[in-house]
Image (cartoon, rainbow, N blue to C red; front, side):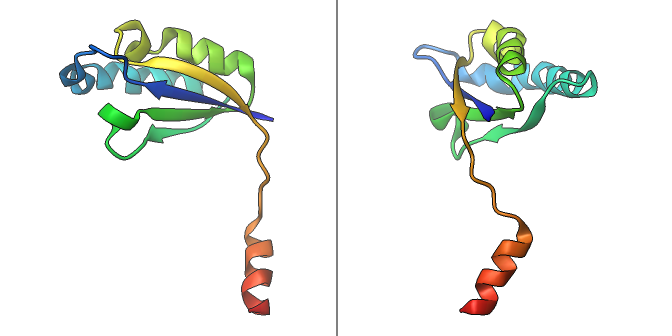
Length: 102
């Protein structure tokens, strides 16, 4: 089980500040990962000021800890929602076998 943090931009947030706060956010996620936090991936969706962004974590505790102190959250630019994700993963080999069968 993995955990997804979905970030939405709250109504009334000053989205012009996203670029201003981004360097703090970047330093935060780099330090979190370097300290062994279970951050697997993160990124924005198309048009992030409307569609938001997400992070993928190995456990709920790290997802909650990350979201609580993320500068985008503490500055009021994002509202986090944490969901458990029961992913079905396919390895490269299984895709290669499927393509050979076609």
